[in-house]
Image (cartoon, rainbow, N blue to C red; front, side):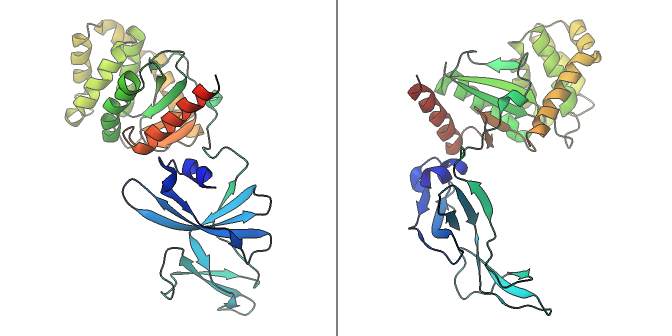
Length: 304
């Protein structure tokens, strides 16, 4: 249970999950235990976990449900809901209304027989002919869904470069996919320009993206093309070829394909990373990110 929850919540240390002893539950066929989870920020949360007798299914809940009492209307029953970490005796904030006085659990079902990482199948994604860093035969593949107008993506960029080029050099491959958010007015056009840079010179893509992120605060829809022209000139690329690519449908279609790939697997914010299919949202400098990468590398080494 401890390892399952550690991986489910991407917690870097086993001690981040404190699992209490299993006890009999008031729910027929289920045992119950308390769980306390800690994060890097020093915060903690309390849960109760109900597990079936076969140990294949668990329900994770952060509320305790009180006994059934007659409800506000004839034929209905009421149960007080109290957060699992709330002091006993404190007033309940929510009420569960049911049409019978039977037992009830409010929580998230977990299949303990499945991979706790919740991996996303990478065969759903278009990964060929994309910007990449690191060797093609690296044991671990990281896919980034990024937005060139996203401030967090700008911060994450240098960090993911360090992961690929220094911290895990030769062991990790990065594939970049565009996910320009609708709230960013120039992100889509920047993504198309970046794709055209890649098509002209794959290595120049990363320098171009670095320039965009560096100057992010000074770029707007009106001067984006001017910034792009400056970067292209500095990179020694052909401006006429780039303009023709931007005007043609191919680069835009690929950006659209990347965006739809992200939607299909539930991406809704940037940057979102998939480490061998394990979803990580946030910065690569987070301890949880390093924990996932190291776990995958150890698994690859053990399988040799």
